[in-house]
Image (cartoon, rainbow, N blue to C red; front, top):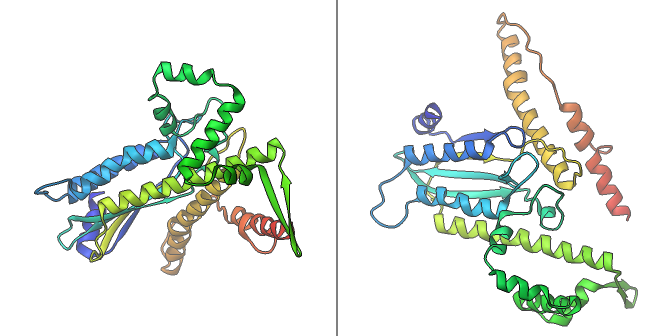
Length: 310
């Protein structure tokens, strides 16, 4: 870390740190220690209020509450990718920062398998009501309880209760010259409800990140920065979703980048300069990337084609 920060300051070249590894390997904790070191090395003495480096470190518990969850391998697993840009001034002191997030696991909001859990924030909210309040709510009949939840959701969305009910329980099919309204069966209505919940939670998370960035503040005059990327490792569960597909594809791309720069390019340089060296064996995952990304026969291209046909 010290040589990297010195290189950034002396050569005026921005740097990036990629924290990678399998799920549960300790990437998030390693990222925290990196952030603490950078805050210590580049921190400014603040006359009043909270400094930029303090706000960066204090954002971690908030993001973990809304973006971390218990999984089979890790009780505090990050379910989103995070890239933190730490900006520095001419003297090498932290002058601003920005947090970028990627691939939030939206499906976890509605679908989890035992012994995994939902995002931490939900359990924090559930711990808030009193025991008496929980018992009183449990005696409400099912139909009345459903109407209560519908009214509450409509109030929070600031929309018409009837309109919300129809949007979740009905589907409008547009035909030439007219539209047909079709009632959804319980399963289809539940899917609509879950889709709405996932979108709302995703936008809430984005709003939260934007508020944190606004609070920390970016330095438009900064010319150098250190970026720290903390992203999930390879995942394989009993039940895998599209999120796992995207996560594993991202890791394959990162692994290929590592192979390209550490093995391929270095060994090509040795060959050009006619340096005596021993070839290093490594697993080239280019075939895997071609299987997924290559056009026209890759998995992603076939998925796109299927979607257009349907």
